[in-house]
Amino acid sequence: MQQVQQFLPFILMFVVIYFFMIRPQQKRAKQEKQFEADLKVGDKIVTKSGIHGKIAELADTTIVIETMAGKLKMERSAISMEMSATLASK
View 1 (cartoon, rainbow, N blue to C red):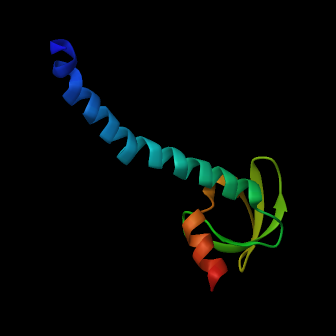
View 2 (view 1 turned 30 degrees about the horizontal axis):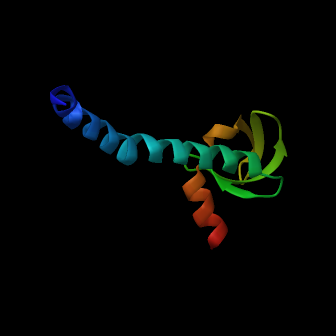
């Protein structure tokens, strides 16, 4: 019983860290992966560097977007989920 009481603060600290840091990060990573999988040709997107465009081609790990300056090829992971969602809602 004494040993359990000694480790109780560490156990509680781990539980708090899990629910406030690890679990939300895992949930966000899952949402981003689903967002990347749901992309389709014609979607308007914003990259993490702030480039606005429309998806012209899709490949496994890359996309080609049309911008006012021409076509750009980039990684799917370069698309900002939050910025693209706000663009789609306008």
